[in-house]
Length: 191
Ligand SMILES: Nc1ncnc2c1ncn2[C@@H]1O[C@H](COP(=O)(O)OP(=O)(O)OP(=O)(O)O)[C@@H](O)[C@H]1O
Ligand SMILES: [Mg+2]
Image (cartoon, rainbow, N blue to C red; front, side):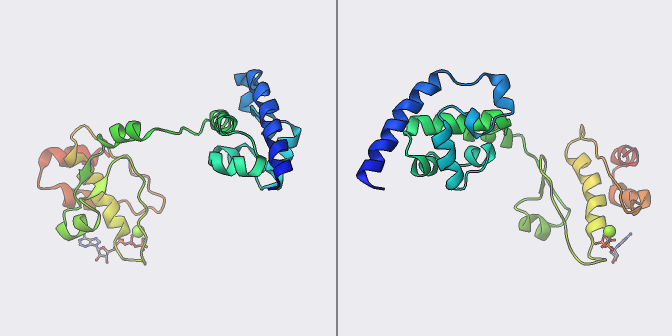
């Protein structure tokens, strides 16, 4: 970037800083386009578009450095712009310590096979979506049956919901997995 351009960019940054003071209301932000974000005037919006930032989502996932490089605005404005884009999209960004707290509530439950548990780092985790894939007859449906039983064994307050899209749910198989404990059998058959 030439010296002249840097000066222009800095000047624009100062001008844009003033616009931050009169940022759009929360309600407007919900449907924010690029130019509704604080710090984005027509010139900056054009620069952002030319650099490939087509919408608020692109801004929300960008780093301040990328925005600064594309537009030449100050870091403070770039950060405000990114935060406003994230707020407008209600993306649910979460700090590391909040995530850590949530992760403390995660329970691992066994598959019944130590080798399988080891592969999974201790078993299947709660609060997550797991996709099992494998060729026909490889045991995906068996795993689903087993997990429906074992999650309730691990946490007696848990309830398994089995959504059967292939009509392959077999209560008889649940009985086989659960039969060593009568109480779990009664609960699991209500699954
Ligand atoms: N009651 C049972 N006892 C022991 N093994 C069983 C029992 N029922 C099923 N199996 C084993 O599970 C295998 C089938 O696994 P499963 O139906 O879970 O496969 P899948 O991956 O879901 O297949 P598909 O892709 O066809 O749905 C069979 O090969 C069979 O050996
Ligand atoms: Mg299956």
